[in-house]
Image (tube, rainbow, N blue to C red; front, side):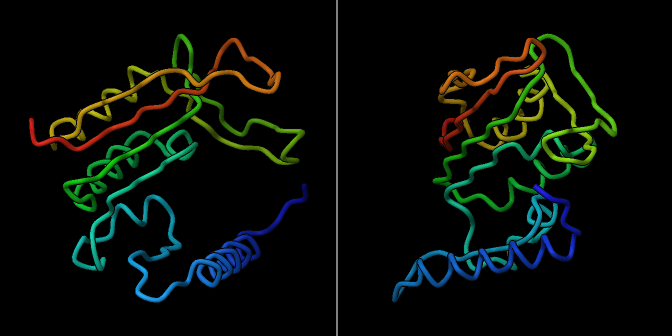
Length: 168
């Protein structure tokens, strides 16, 4: 890996989105590609979208967003979801207590990074917004350890599946 500046990274992402659009272009397709940050997507008004989202996958994003912004993102996301939405959320979480790393050096990334490893109970507090909007948690657990991956005592991978139900 080598360090890439933000402009180069954005160009690379745009190129990948363009390739995906070309590969997945079908006549009368009923989907769209949006290339924005999670925070920007959640700030968008639902009126700006052609239609609301019926599937949402968020993986390994929330741990890089500070508490206030994450709360705003989740609140903003509610307005972008349709009544049949299914959500899959997965994050690396703190096993016992919250762990915040600031300017942590990484040999693998060859740079430093900031991350907040929240506990599952902290994420569940954020997910109350979804539950109050009519979603229910259908499955929530730690992910299995596959392929002899390294195990860390402080963190683990955790997921939540939410489904909209009119029972709320």
